[in-house]
Length: 154
Image (cartoon, rainbow, N blue to C red; front, side, top):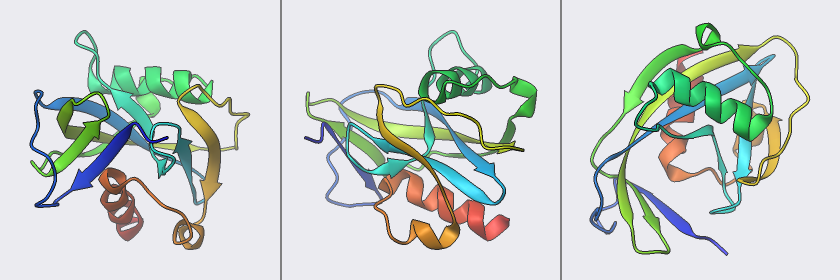
């Protein structure tokens, strides 16, 4: 069962009931393939990442999220900040009634070798995809434009 629904630029999206939520996500690649997680909360594929805690920088949050969601450790210096996505229509609506406007800071991490990954409680599956394989899966709408932008710029 889905506990969250995502919107991007949808005029029918619900209006936020909470303040803006700052998150960090990563374009993690290995040999030209993109790592995505199949999320438990929505059963869709998305970028690794999550919310930035009050005491963290965006890159500190990304290092923490990579460790929590993948079971690997990376140095902050390995992350390359790409850009922020913060238009008002990027919304997450949760089953508990909270509705958040999302502001996402995106980083890139290139892995030389495919690591042994550990699936966290937040994921159903982790997998590296080619650009062609991405056409066959459902990607979280709040990440789909980020992924498209990345492929245009590689």
